[in-house]
Image (tube, one colour):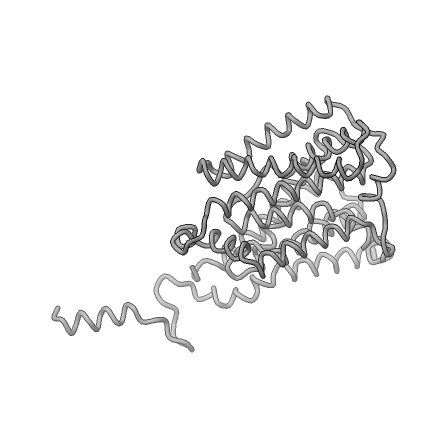
Length: 343
């Protein structure tokens, strides 16, 4: 092949796909572009269909202001944990210890209150515990280069043990009335946890969208090597994301303890899987398949509506767990199907 032929071949290989009705290049799937709008809006459509289905089955109960308030109150704590889990997943990791962190932080705030400490001191102590757990996770993953799965699984196990030590395996109760307002109080006719969840979500949204650290989190999650070459301190950015997750999980544990007026060693454990599920459901909204706070809140709404609606029509908890798993698998699989052929 002469020089002119080589040049033509190279130009042809480097040329971008032509717009219009040109057939899809080899290796690309023609249905990918057609699935794009459906994929990105499918989760929202699914959420609307869930609301419509339960509304048709029990309109006298489901479609009432009281029930809407109940749903929002039920998902408020999950929304807080899922919001901070979103930060970690934006960076490209995940935190399996958020549920255990919520449990131990709730136990700590309860013990401090029982010991006679004021509400502000007790809450601050619980948040410090959450920050320490997050710092351990961040150090293990960012600086020691351990897998986030291994590191946070180990931390989850250890922190769960600390929760049992803190509570001595019993239920802590007898908390002061002033503390109860965090989880049981109302403002403008709505439970305070709803406003706290909205505030956390709004802060996470603002930080991810409008701040330098938010852009760095996205950069590291997109391509850590490129971010490093651009001058981003990747280790510090990852470390900070885990600290944020720890503090947020601790806040959720404090609110949960206030709402229940008691603390146990396992009170927050169930929120870990639900938070990850909510973020995964929300990722299907993004064209790039990345974590985003808006999608996470939609995911939280889906899980909340599903649980509430199934309770209203009398479906058992075991069936609810099964259906929740099926919905998550379907959403993620649909997202992957849409991403094939465009990657």
